[in-house]
Length: 461
Image (cartoon, rainbow, N blue to C red):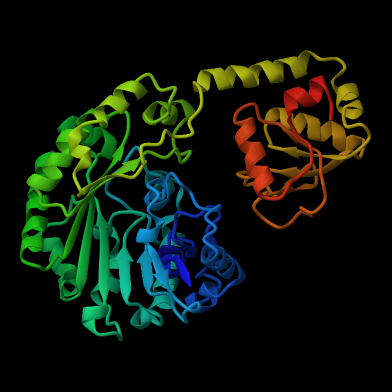
């Protein structure tokens, strides 16, 4: 049977809680936590098995196409492998649990995690995670680090890498190192130079070779000259055969898109990259909405979007070693956030001024309890009214950290906590992305009448 190699074999520990996921490009990808279970148990958990079986059926409906270049570029055949069953252990283990970095990149959520984290508690967790990993490390054929921070400031990760002794022959073992390159010099390399005996891939992300752009997007005061010197050192290791594969990457966004042709050319001609990866910017919610909107130049409403399309027509992007992982597709970013904001203001304002709001909410259910999606102000207002009359069937919210509101459970639609086989009427209490939310709910088997809050208040169910 054929299956995506990442979905079957690529296991990552991706935060200080020891949370484990398959691939990392799958929605709702958590399969367990090393603070509760060992990695063998987690890899064979129900959630992991469900994900793997879906991929055996080549069902990629849970995959994030903006993150997966294989999907966006219609190149899934490049990553399919033949297997007969789920193996005892995954082949690949990626260490991203130390979310620490010496940068504060504008396109990354790690700086926010560091600000909000408890250092003492995290260090306690890191030691548990490190201990849990030691028993499985010999069975791993491919080890990678650090996709969720900076490798050379991740002391527990460096220790595990330095002590890795796989049972498999060294010619069958692979190492994948991800770094921002700022500390990849001869001194730091000596900490893990034992990895040079295996098939070694190095992936360096550089936001730009223009110093001011590089510093702004990386949140650093380091001169670009330091990165360039380190890249020459890395190139030297590549030419010596110590590094077997070198990928240089960036995140394409409003600040740097104009420099992409020159950036790509230098990566190949000056620094000897085997692969240049142009990653699309993703809105992670770690910056204010209007900033993320303006950063995402792939959005068709962006004022520079047409210019971006012209830049990406440059012949350099046809080079076989340069890969635009957006696949030429626009992002799903909608209209200006100001318009969305005004839409919300209009809905809330109308609700505040409507003396008949309670009567409308009750009558517009047609006597049948409904589900409300979204704990916005308008959602909470409607929930309070419907609960008073026993007309609330449940609350859905994909992102809420709240487990209960008004003593009613708040359910993530991706979970199985609500009976999806029943046909519910659902009111979407958010003013933006209504059509996307409808598609999302239909995908997760909510099949009843789904309407916006504006239509609910104006027309009823």
